[in-house]
Image 1 (cartoon, one colour):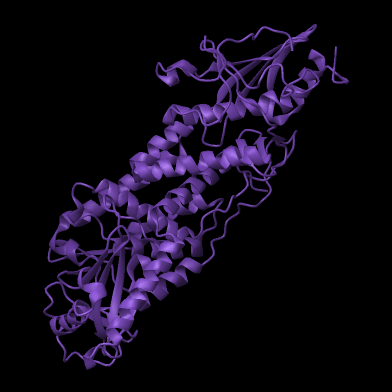
Image 2 (cartoon, rainbow over the protein chains, first blue to last red):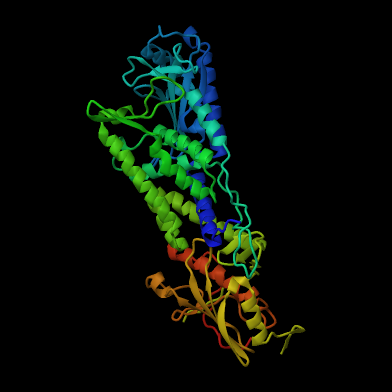
Length: 396
Length: 147
């Protein structure tokens, strides 16, 4: 039998629950997601109904964090970013990125519903729904040279098409997110040989998906750390790619006592997934898109090495901050540490959720106290129920 | 003494129950008609560990103190709610002269869980300055009154 310190186990389970609460406060809710879907389906119908024959077969689908379900609300704005691809499947590279983009823009501008929401961005069109979303619509065409069924999207200057594969990337990510880790959490553990042996702290839900949650907390931590210099902040696609590869590597090679240990290990292995080598005396970095040929997510690092430095600095800080979270002592201190990591709004949301959970269990009569771990909701062996009471006081 | 037909527990019985319950694992002294019990309590898995002392004399209400860490220091000069006194901090866990605690009730099944609950709301109060555990604050109290 593995001996696992029940207090440590309970602490880690609690950290996982708190991170879950943080993520829930930052991501698109299910109803927001449904609303986004309705909105972009409307956009798709509008484009497909256009008089322009170029757009007739167009399809609209999600890409990026909304497609992966790893959204994190941007800091300081009320709108979530929802990234869309407007894909024209029956074209070849004869149409220029600028011409396809213009066709889409013309169609949206001619529609009364969209004209006032429309903003032009360098590579895409943005529909801004105040207090809801920024919907970025990027044109795309098939990539006849991609063996994975990839697409071509405009480059930054809208001059050339460049390889990408949002659908393939999403499939790859989802395949990894579905991989089940081996967690020894439920194993029977000994508290004290002379006394009762108890199961670990009950896993109230646990992570909805460790990979997605790891990506979300990493991105949010990045947003907070680079709040004053966002242009060197590690890209979301880099964080997502490294985390998903590290996740697959970790769960293939190891088993874990609990989910937090897995999160720490995934984060720890993220840099191992970066390929680096000296080219003509200079360090070059490669994070290849595995779903299309020739897309290096770290391309900018090779022109601006300070971006690579920023990534490694963020990574060191993220690991140190996560360790701090596990060592915290006191609900008030937990709130402070969460604030530092993720900002005050999600920190307060998590503490309030935790407090509300205790208060409603108390009201419902299913709050208990367990040895060495304190209050606990629901049945835990060797625990004692918390009867109704009214705190009293003195003004002396 | 008889309350509502149930027999009061003696200090010795309370002592045995405190010693036997894993949530109040600790040490104490039993004297004729009274006891002192010390144990470590934490409100939740990421909470602090607090040194709790229960003083109980048969026929009186139990008195619960937090010996460490120093609560007024943690509070940073603010007046801590739901205490009979600020230093040493003595907890007000239930409404006196009601049926929430009576002398036939086991301390390890009432006072000890309520202490964990008090500590939870205390730590939350440290951050929010808002006591979320409910309760009453009377103008004056009679804490020495017999139960």
